[in-house]
Length: 346
Image (cartoon, rainbow, N blue to C red; front, side, top):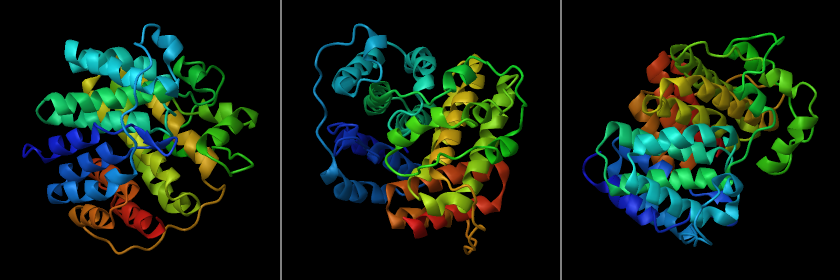
């Protein structure tokens, strides 16, 4: 991605805020990175021409961040957080900033319906695999700032991250996903739905059921499996919430993409947080009983993304990007149907 189109797109987007219409996430940086990554640079500016009109201006700050703990999760401080991380990434190597803030932000992985971590994952992928330059550092700064401003824990995640699983039956990813409960009232927005989880008697035991990673390599394998199984679950449950259940796949994908830039000691808690995100989204949006996976004409990975790019919806593009990663890691051709299915539903 050295032709400059992605950087031009970033510069256009960095004049806009991380949210619009109140609290909807700005998907522009994530979608254009995926388009450029998969060889569709020619569509990037046309896509942006259509998308930019819905976005809000960059938020203004109130006053500099001094007590970060007090400001964490305060959306009114979004402008302050963006400015804070812009300064941090001007003054320090980006991996150092990420390494400092990843464990602070990880407990609030629900931020912006998981879009905070998803945007960080896209930004890190660029910095890890391509040249480092100011637009790309600014993108990471805005991604981290958005996550900090919308920082939101998932109920029960603090105990999982702290390793409080004594006496729990430990399960693999498949069994843990199968054992997730559902909230009774699957209406309303994501914040209202997540707020119901503490009242679900089986929620915390189910959240603690996934076997913790005993090594960094186990954590990476666990994340790979989680993305794989979440992609297959989209085929069973996606009809119930076609947009929101995309994030049950893209959130753990973002965490998996970030691992190479992190100290290996952070890999196991990264799996725990990613599992909490996928588990929560499944519990609050997926029906108790799935449907038989749809029959979709098999296509090549290249055509999977080309169809998503033609469709144009940002969630379809991001899901195609995620399932292609999972397909490359697992070779499971069933994953290739998920993006096409999302395109039918959205």
